[in-house]
Length: 412
Image 1 (tube, rainbow, N blue to C red):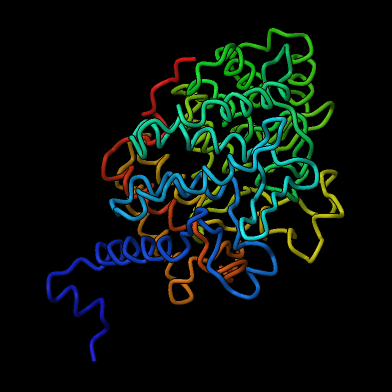
Image 2 (cartoon, rainbow, N blue to C red):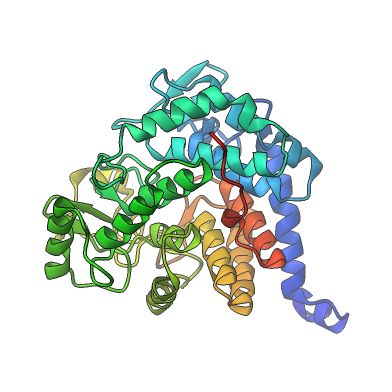
């Protein structure tokens, strides 16, 4: 019997297009299955997911899912896109912080060990994204008080001379990684939030972002403290093509934070030369091999000064695993969007096909992450933000638009 792909070719059906159509259908079905009245669960309901709290409303996951739901073309998903954002707002801390996750059934909110900084950032981004599309109309207005508290909490984390957020290590999505001080990923989101909500000092945030995280090009930082931090990295860093993953007092990260670098490109922090430089470096590092994408260019090893004992907890963050070089399909969606936004539609479509192939492994498992070398399926099955990121990337490629560039600034 002929293989199915051969039969499809003979019948005039493009197997890649069929795979993309299958992935779209499966992604929508997964999100519909994981959508509850309280919002989008992080993963499909299994005994293991229940035990590890993945059947709750995670701040960053629900926010990213809402972006893909908004452009999915599916009525039930667009109607439910804001549900998780409302739940998170209902459990907002008095200080303004949005929870790491909410267990709506138990009526509990969790804020992580050292504080979860990026849930608040992603929540604000998602609120603006949905409001701009009228899903529903007046979403910003309905959450104006919660938005004000969230922005106030983030402003309290901002350095008052550098206008960049400061954070502890292990306190964003890469929650067992040693990035601390000024972190690339977090501050890319912060600049985007500043523009969406019309916050002051956004130009200074962008300027100091580039001076601190890529001190190898462009004018030096204007502030004396920023120059001190940047000059240390400038003298001692070995890899100079990508933005540094973080900068702290006398130490910094050059493992190559793929997600942070992609966000710098997508969220308007990188100029034309920096965008091209970053994309070239990511391609040269083969971050999309064996599948899109590894979230670290070069994993942190036990012999590295940045290694922390907690990274070996449950043998989870060893090299090429989890946040330390594992493959995360949701980040692969941002890779596709970056390629499309930078004028490489053919490459973007190839990577979208490969992303669909990754999602299909294990009988459409939509695995949370995969081993960075062996492609072994790891983490939870039915990871919601993988499905949403595929839909968002698919929409970006079809529309030839950067989905993060469309929202109107909010009048305050």
